[in-house]
Length: 121
Length: 206
Image 1 (tube, helix red, strand yellow):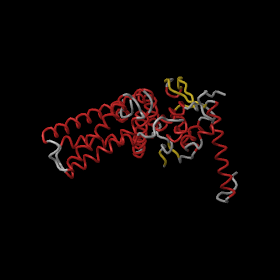
Image 2: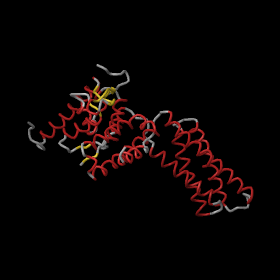
Image 3: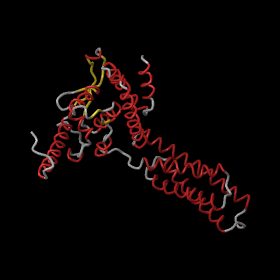
Image 4: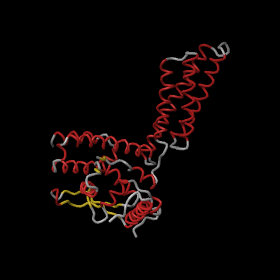
């Protein structure tokens, strides 16, 4: 697992703010550049969440510093092979995402137990 | 370059230099892609964009100023230097006032005002020296000294107005600015847990 010696246990970062988790989810299945992350977050939330570019890059900067995301630079075929930054989850980032998903799963189960929501499909 | 792009580039100048150097190119690319996709023609786009800019610029500046980076320390030192200069000015000014008007002949309230002012300004001077030396531990004492300065100058201004307008402005205005800066920056040094909070609610939600 690519986890730096200084990285704290994944659970210590929880709960993640929803915007942070949205960004992480957008990177689970593929590496993406900033605009692709924004579109993926919007698609994934049905347009309910729209990340601003300044917010996104500020968040990415912090995620990179925390070792959750790493960035690479390569040409983007969609914008005339202009070089741009792509972001992908590190193994540590995946561990953080799994920990947050487990935590949210527990929250949902508790809500179900309290009959606040029905069984999810 | 189109006009809206030029406007956006000018707005990006409000970010701290380090952030701009790092991400300006990417931000411009995103802007062009949003325009290509027809998103920027919507007037709500500009509203959301400005809100996003205001929030993220404030956050990046906050991080820039409070981080243990060289620039964060530099901001600390600048405030420390300003504190030293203001405190030295006020100490000398109050000493000159005492020299000109005497001390023993004044009433008790005036004497108390002078003594308290000298004490709080000396405290501000000492804590300012600590800030100039880059010691974050000096921040709490600087805050207490600033609060004391405000109280002592307000006391003098109300009870025995004997100092010049410039001295009063500097004696109250700077400590207020210093206190605000210290209050805004009290949670400094981004830990991983704070990293999480740092991006909370920074998205624009429709």
